[in-house]
Length: 245
Length: 173
Length: 173
Image 1 (cartoon, rainbow over the protein chains, first blue to last red):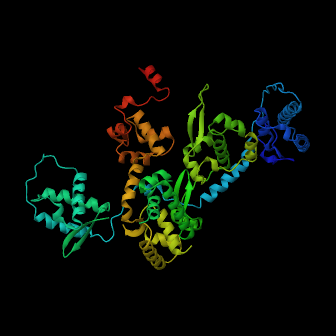
Image 2: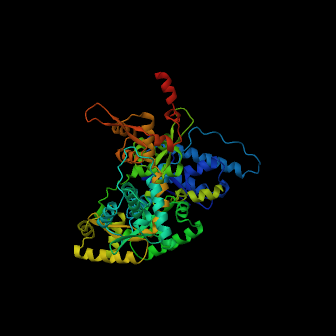
Image 3: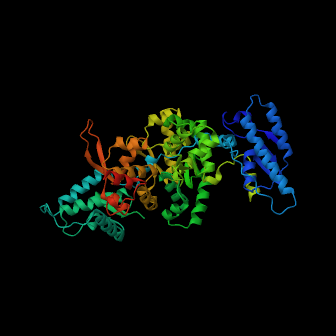
């Protein structure tokens, strides 16, 4: 069976494109242009494709064609003749049919062949527009939240002030000796809290701590609270630290 | 916290489709376990709530169910750029014939296509894969992951068939 | 789709805390209903799953529970360092054409590039080298040592040649 595809999908005038003839047979389904290309590349067995209906459909098309488009008609005729010749050779009982003549202008697959794909892509796009994903920027700014039930910022500030009062006052040296990085202090605090299980702030501070030690340890503590590695609570006014398992 | 929960959390914070490998690495779990848990998460989400798990652009991602589209549209007032029919046609040709040059596309369409190509590059739907080693070194275009994403495709094998093409492939095989 | 579900969907797609008013408007519901549903959503999330509803910065937002922190940290770290295609493109232009202004970059790319530039500055891959002595004093960007570091370059001379560029340089020399 052959039928003529939508005529409106013809390529714009002025270009030699084959007519949009669609071939449907047990051995092949697709446009005449595609069949031509497959035959030329030896990728289709023409003996399984009846060409008579294709020729009849072609004649019908020419008859119905309102405007005389000699270029389109010629291009399709060339493809048809080529197919008939190839098929004829393939039916003859000879091992090596002569190579086909090289045809100068090959019919190319035309845009109408993609019409179905374009339709289904359009439909997919419409369906997809009903779905919403989290926006990229939101994820970019994503921070792991603080543990719920932790103390408030004001509570922490009070605890900080209290412990600062007990620190050994040492003059700040402008170019002080090398200090550990915040990451190192965080590791130290986390180690102390984990080994103690449940600890007060003194446990994580060095013995005979200075005000600078307090500042460093608190910074580390805040960071650990923020990334959810340590949980802080108040017990009778005392700041209690626990590791988050 | 079960593995299913952790996976849900990871997909929540991710800014795009996440590959199975990355999920397995973050969870410190075997891929086969992660796959089973993802399938459980998918069924759980499908059964209730407004979210769903999809396989898209080569990974897993969570998105809303279509039923919420109206409220979300009111909320986000998204300016969805619709693709014109001609842009879609060029996109389809690139998708099925990639890598392909402007010249080849114009031969198929019979019309100039550089404007459509440029706008598709700007929308990050196609990109310059390579250049041909012929005079003028024409650009070869291919589709991006963003292309897969906006058409809800996991990979190029999921493209809808061109009319007749599947049969053609069988014949050629 | 219940009101609770729709609210979950809205908070899922939102890129920050959402005010009660905005939620009520998007759901086309009364504030008092929305509040009740938010409280139901909050309890539901608290009871199971890896997500929680928090009140933050004058609005509502969904985030993960702290128990998932380890997996998320493992997951986000490499992801944060991954550069998007457009960021890479901007970075390449800055690398080869530095010092360069936003306007010049946008002229080359044909698309707005300030978001990519900002994210590259945040990642410490480019920095404000100077400002041009022209009206508006546009910022001139250049690449940082961190840029050399992550691309394993010793100095800028080691950048791979752009196609055709070496010839241009010879002509100019």
